[in-house]
Length: 178
Image (cartoon, rainbow, N blue to C red; front, top):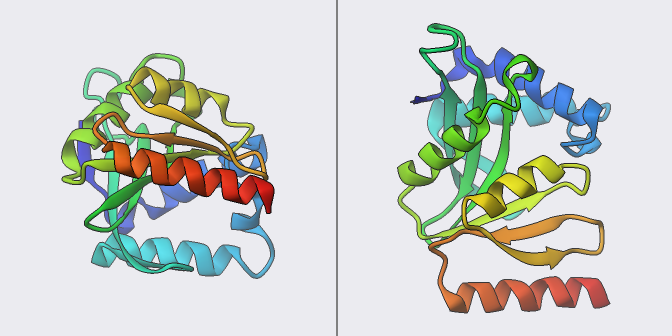
């Protein structure tokens, strides 16, 4: 079951993000010298306020921690961070704790998160080394839009409209040619 994340969950989220950087699932720039403190301060502020500041400007943050009372009653097993606005939301970052992976919990967490965010157009961006995340999103009905020039895979949510899908494909193609 998903619960709204708050600042007390930051250490757990940070641990999984750092582990994800080490495995290549998340971008190493997140923990680069000088960037790590600013990134996690921004996440903490987002956990408090529900808003984060991105290079594109301020965005809403939906932050969840995942608990499975059948596995571990009081211990979070994963997190999901989604960001965006009224028209488009991005599955920004998500992870399941290593001891609980490959048990179907990621699928349960993602499915529940999809139902809790009231925005139709959903984007998933997966690092080239995060095949598990891309595979999961595809099983949840996301459409593969292609891979950008830096190896990032773009996927569009199952309820997204055709106009958004076509615009995203054109943008990816423009980036590839640039």
